[in-house]
Amino acid sequence: MADRYGRRRPLLAGVSIYVVATAGCLFAPDLHTFTVLRFFQAIGGSAGMIIGRAIVRDLYAPREAARTLSLLIMIMTLVPMLAPVLGGFVVSHASWQVIFLIMLGFGLICGTLFLLFVPKTLAPEDRHKSNLFAILRIWVDLLRNPAFGVPVVAGGLAQASMFAFITGSPFVFITLFHVSAQTYGWIFGCVALALILAGQSNRMALHRKSPQTVLGSALIVNVIAGLAAVLMVSFHSLPGILIALWFAIGTLGFIGANSAAIAMAASGAHGGSGSSLIGVFQFGLAFIASSLIAACQNESAYPLVLAIAGCGLASASLWFASARLFRNAQP
Image (cartoon, rainbow, N blue to C red; front, side, top):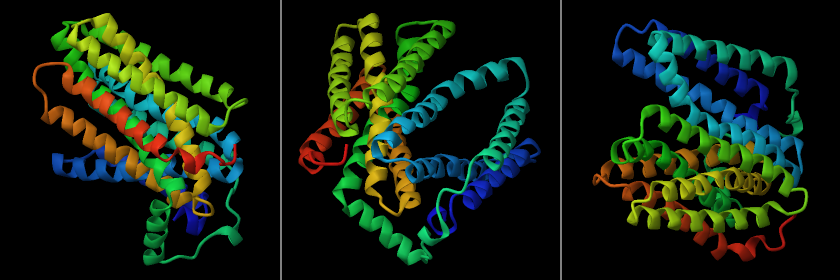
């Protein structure tokens, strides 16, 4: 829809769905209604993530887009990590409805800011009057293009390790290593700090290096850190595990932005469709990684660190196996 109708109307529609569904959650009479409303709330919320990337693609050349996406994706990556902590704080001091009041206010603020400050970025003559079958063909064509598909899958695999961390880290640190809930909050904060530092470092690095070069370097560090985390678990070293995971998750600040920028540049005139596929692979692979950790729990830290190391290895293997495709890419 973002490629067919422009960026503003679909995004405003998404924000409206989010706001209405959030308000409905406050007054849901039963769990089934609440679950359905949460489903529509997620659909509305996804518009901001997808169309935000498309707007960046409209406005900037590949390298500048990567620098801008560093900030955008840093926020997108931090939010899933900080939200459980903030939500737990709110619930411990107020009723659960307060969470949805905060979300409602947040949605209204986002919609207002968008109306006031975001211009039209896709001219009418650049829009595609495609039907559903044509859109499906566009998706297939994008995925068949290695210049798009490789960074999407490589970035999605790496990003899945973050959700693996979110899923598995409470058990590892609180249950296995008997860390207090307050200390665990500090651990979460340190990992979030790694993402912030990486996002800012990525913006500076892109002044001198191409997104392809920075992405390759970050993937190497990610693999080394993931394997180090596995080794530290075998030694039952809490400091070693923390340091290795700090680097493994921190590198996502480089990987997410650059893989998305490379893929969006390869999406050509189909920025909305390209951005939607990035979201599908990010959250689809994240779901798989989180589910595997839950299913394979064996009362040890191995499911967590093996998932993170495995995601990193798969991502790096795919990228470097296809590196020749990007050797002469626009910097």
